[in-house]
Length: 285
Image (tube, rainbow, N blue to C red; front, top):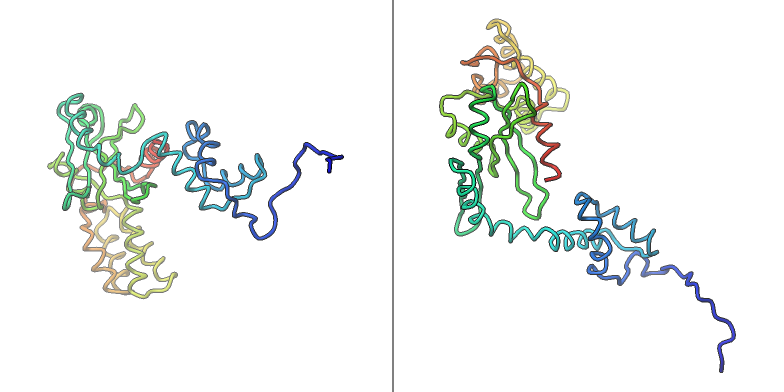
């Protein structure tokens, strides 16, 4: 028996019941994308999936693409567990290189719970070069533990936003931390965050979407009032629709977010531009 015809070009593609269930390993996928991950850490799993098909004719499912990226990121940047294990080392380095900084690491039964960091350079910069105004914001951390990064950003009128504090904690934790650093400073909660929380509670009360929107608009209207009678009108209308809505609004401590009740200097800044700038900066990091 002898071979009479030989075609050196392979033209067969995956087909049948195994299509999309390729035996290609996660390690192979990682090897193909690692160089790309160095310059594009935000590479999506769907892009990897499509790239494997267009470059090699291999169909893989989303899960395998995701794990290939996960392994590649761990090889390049280390894994999340090792990063949390390094926090004590990082704390010592911060104190050694930036004396006067504040680092607090809380654990519960030996497990990481929350982290507070404020670098002395940022504290000094805020005191000497920024207005006494802080913008609070929360950003979800896209790691396997799904934490939250809370930040306090100062506003320098002549420079880009000044990042003052970074905290892994709950909303009430960032308030306590800022008050610890600046016990005499007054600051307002993010109005948009407050309104969203308020509307969520209204939904929990069983209100339909249109009523929830109306209640949220009334609360937001009250935020900007400088005249007592106008504030009272908004709150009376709120109470008339649902007294529980009025009680909820009062529980938010109006002196912290409402113009008329704010006990210190009013800076007239009710935009989220500064925190959006921070979000844009922190996303890649």
